Length: 116
Picture 1 (cartoon, one colour):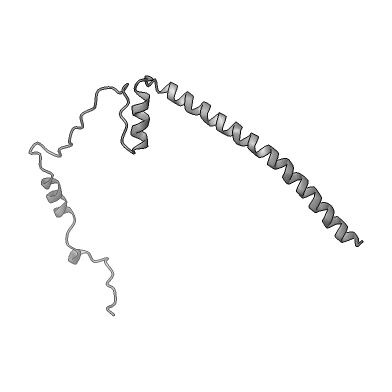
Picture 2: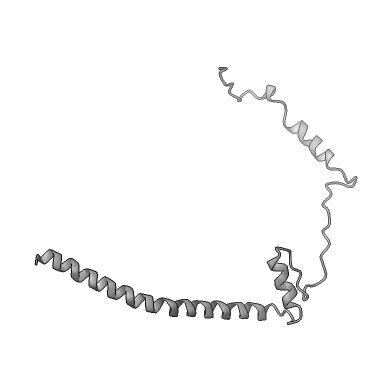
């Protein structure tokens, strides 16, 4: 038999053996990954200090894409609007800028584009 063909046949056998070994190893690695993920999830849930009674409702709200409000949350914070002046109007701010930036007609450095 040709030596090159023999080398290819040997390489095929080694590859088949390696595939068989990896097929045995793969389920074990997947099991380990799942165990590690479950352990991480348990640690996260425990660190959130959610009561066991509130946990099912919290998880259901996550499942339904709602914004979950954990039972351990503090009082809500009120958002205060920012008002620019004492009158409560933002229009005066805009008017102030009108004087600082004149029309484009006064701008000498603006290049004109050729018309098509």
